Length: 102
Image 1 (tube, rainbow, N blue to C red):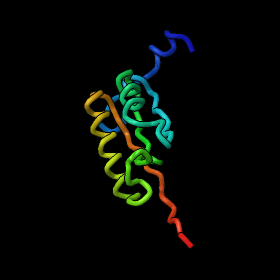
Image 2 (tube, rainbow, N blue to C red):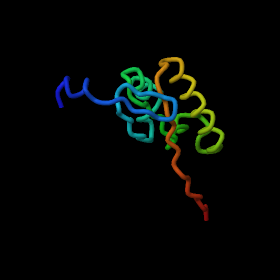
Image 3 (spheres, helix red, strand yellow):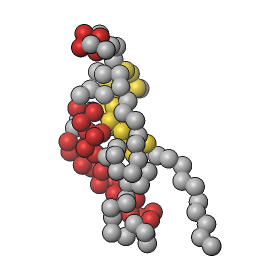
């Protein structure tokens, strides 16, 4: 795709939101799709995505307080992304499968 083809792409409408570039970043988990990547995509006119998969893995209590660590980390990533861009952001939430410890 050349630069003119990119410029000729139609805007993406999502409700009352208008993405100048009709691109939605994939929600790649385990530390890839966080505030930095999502805000960069949103700044360029696309839809930036923060993934919840493993978002709290760097929290000190991740292994002992899994739910709270992930919630805290997600709130932090959303806050950081909002500070970096006024563009469109999305959160990709995967369904969590219950783990049974034997």
